[in-house]
Image (cartoon, rainbow, N blue to C red; front, side):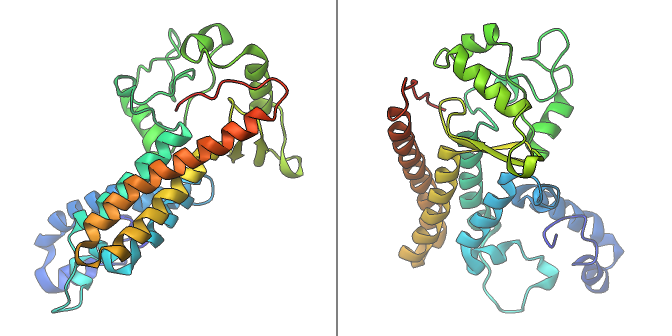
Length: 274
């Protein structure tokens, strides 16, 4: 909650004391920008019900206290102490978060004209006429990017046009898993399947965590931690390059493991790219 702009107990009082009430609007805009870039308020919403929050905490740990201190409000900074730029802190974390979101199918970077809709799925706020579209762009963006919601699988006749790698049996098993499987303790809060859409996945309070998504997140965080350690003279470059390479390595490793898993099935399915 510390990085959330909604946390009015931190920073605002010091600004008033040092700069007066006139500085509050500019300070508030700065806090809002930092909130968006660091998942400040979104993490409060996500922390109990979305895998992205866990990945956010993981990347924040990986970035380390040196770079993380960039998001410390200026009014709370220690005099004469060197602080990194906000970009040095946020860009590596953004790379890691974006890779995690794409690998999990939360946002499709190749379908941004439909607000990142995942192929084969409806919009997060679907139109009644065409569930692949939305009539409310603001609600779609809020639902997809803030609340982390994704759409539902389209009817198979439409689904297969965008996901021809998935056969009907796999599709039907997957929709049963989504809609009828009660999972752990019979509550439907946490459940998993080794098949998914040709990939093992967990559902945590309805939100997807795929095998390749998990390995991508772990790889990116590991890359950040190693990158800033191995390149101490330019921790920003090391962390950013590490995030990108770690995410690619994590995704490749997860895809490789998935190939092995699929090969052990009686009728191996084609493993699709994300």
